[in-house]
Amino acid sequence: MNQIQPFTLPGDSTMMQKDFLFGVATASFQIEGDYQHRQPCIWDTFCSIPGNIADGSDGKTACDHVNRWKQDVALIASLGVDVYRLSISWGRVINEDGSLNRRGMDFYIALLDELNRHHIKVFVTLYHWDLPQHLEDKGGWQNRETAFAFADYSRLVIQELGDRAYAYSTLNEPFCSAFLGYEVGIHAPGHKSRKKGRVAAHHLLLAHGLAMAEIRRHAPKALAGIVLNFSPAYAFTSSDADIKAARLAHEYHNLWYLMPLMEGRYPDIINSLSEAERPEILAGDMDIIKINMDYLGINYYTRNVYQAGGELGFEDVRIDNVPRTAMDWEICPGAFTELLKDLSQEFNLPPIYITENGAAEDDALLNGEVHDPMRLDYLQSHLLAVHHAIENGVDVKGYFAWSLMDNFEWAEGYRKRFGLVYVDYTTQQRTLKSSAKAYQGMLAYRQALSQK
Image 1 (cartoon, rainbow, N blue to C red):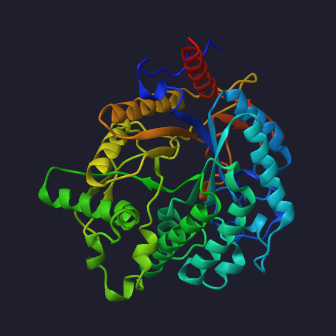
Image 2: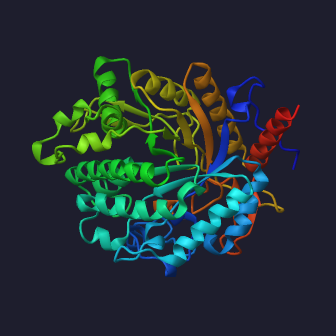
Image 3: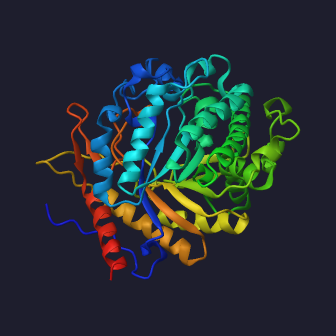
């Protein structure tokens, strides 16, 4: 293979300064394995139902990270990143009666200590979709009490980890938990109800606010925030009807989660829902949800295009003859820049971290190497998209590539590979892809610049 060229950014870019944080990210269920030492979660149940997972797989072994964490930390350190984003498995650290699982907690303490020993800052995500099944049996995110159970779990974790974490995120992508899991049913727990999706969203946001208070109380030096995913909504044509459709989709899929955090209210499209479909909002809920945050995590992969139609006034349109990833998602870095600019203009946002950005490619290991040209182009163009947003005044403090390594890709199983590092699931061998080497090269160059 030819020498891999590092990703490049302008030398005077804010992103090339040493206080801008570059990292990689993972999630517990997707990499950890070791399922016998944690409570079953909704994804274990979802995986057990034939037809739910594209390749019929599950997360019981995944990347065997629980047993290989030391070599994985060494791998992370070899990339030269400043920061690593991971999630805690709720059912690994908390027993069904709510007490602490010492074995599980000690795993994370050792992991964070090792990362800190390598001078790698840690972003801890408290919830990345793996709700313990016993709580789902009581209604899951349909049950308001789950928000308070999450606050109790968060308190125990934060008391143990404390300032070992540089930052805490309460939730990862509540859109996916609520919409994909409770409204359309393609993610765990697999419900299909608009009412359930909207109720789940409200209880997730309530859980965020309750957990934020616990972070402030027990880890006051750590940054505290949330991670939201955004797929910017574009109109199919310039007609007034399609432009309105795109705005409605933006409200329903994006602003439903951001506006309560920033303004203490749901977007106007809530008025298009029947009374029976709207969540019950109790007095004081929005004050809890609207708690000030130290940062907002933004995950971006693609844009969506809409035209007028459908029950709520919008419907998806698939654009032909555009570049796409192996997930069939359109590659559109310009939409990333526009998203960051538009959100910063519309809301008084806290500092932003790009907590996920990446692409699935049909990678293959050939002669001990993995060349991933589409991902190289994708990451290079999206790094520049962030640079352009910063140039336009957006306050971005860091960027995390998704993902550190190939892993269990939810409903797609192991068919889709997002990693900078290739994983052979039979041998658990890790191999740096060309994209990992390009990221590594850029960070080495930045390090050299800082020492001049």
